[in-house]
Image (tube, rainbow, N blue to C red; front, side, top):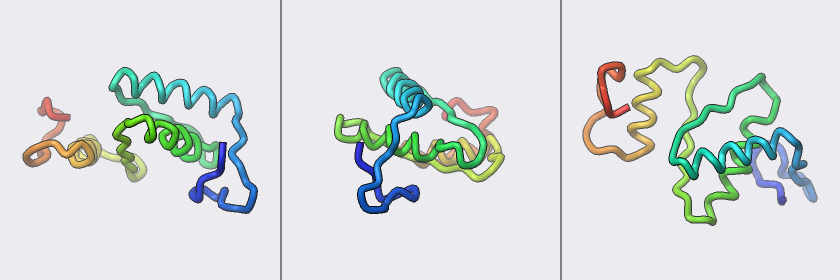
Length: 105
């Protein structure tokens, strides 16, 4: 697995170390994409969440998957999550003002 130029691994000859956590993330992300579902990866700062997700999603892009990345601020509101999903998925119309009462989100 070659290192990408993101996430502090753009050093010459650097590569991503395939750990058990990375393999688990890859399996979970692959299953989630196959199911056309959503998932959340969480954990403490510096545990490799971003690296794992970016590495796994990068592997799916050549397979023809339409990968869309959404980054939320800390503790996003339901409205913020709904708005970002609505925008990232290019849904028609305007995002709902009250996501709790909406079937769009």
